Length: 357
Image (cartoon, rainbow, N blue to C red; front, side, top):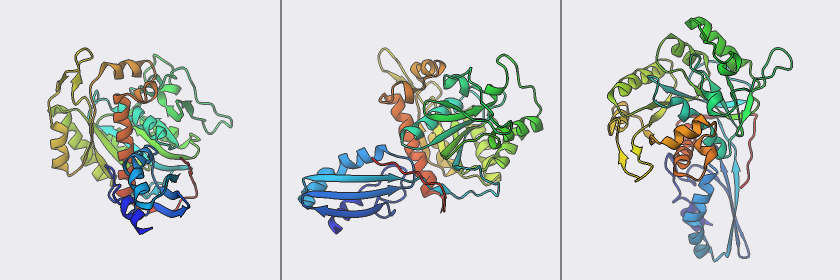
């Protein structure tokens, strides 16, 4: 079936360092009468790639082999990637992705929520930790501000479930209207407790919404959380870009790989006429990515619907998963998952996730 492998080797989506065949994802090919069977095993989230693969190659495969039917056997087994830091891992959690920014107000939490939900949409088991201790917004954005983690043994908390993912936040633990007036060491200790004393269960990815900035709290968290990799959020304006450089330097200092840069609020789309305008400038994220030798992972728009959906506790990926706004986050999630795998080293895992499609 060499001709089939040659066709399959044409499939190399955005974010993949190798094609389908070279990466070793094709596990079996056989043909019985007029049915061609292709078995694939992919070690990261990306169920939507199967539809892309079918659309791109299925007709060619039928023509090449004379088969009238192509049957795809898709196994998704998310790999545990090695960490650069010696911090002990979290039981059951394969990979931890930190979502960070150099300053506040750039849409970091919105991006973290939608990234987590998009990874779940792509077939992964996902958790979300709100580490923004002074401004926890995850409970509202997920539509569960009145939920509280339950502890059955007085030692560990059960995370809150929302839209198919599990989450925990200081916002669930501090009464509404009260401020978490804590100094750096106390805040870091509280977050470490939330991370380690939550029964996350078996997760392929735990997304951590980091506090904005690069101060003592952020540095301590980066050192204490067994992070696999990080992504940096910025807007195109110069002030945000300056702070992102500091954030990248911080992660470099604690040997946490930065997968790339996400430019949020890249442009505003008028809801009446569709005109796009670069309110915060243009090309800043791309320029910074080139300077830092990092990929620009996405350019996300500033859109009133995103604000409305987030305030209502129904993020775009949940509210309208087929909308262009949601598809932006799904493309981002597939790219992040692939780059996390191809950019690191997989290690043996005792946890097996198998999803067939």
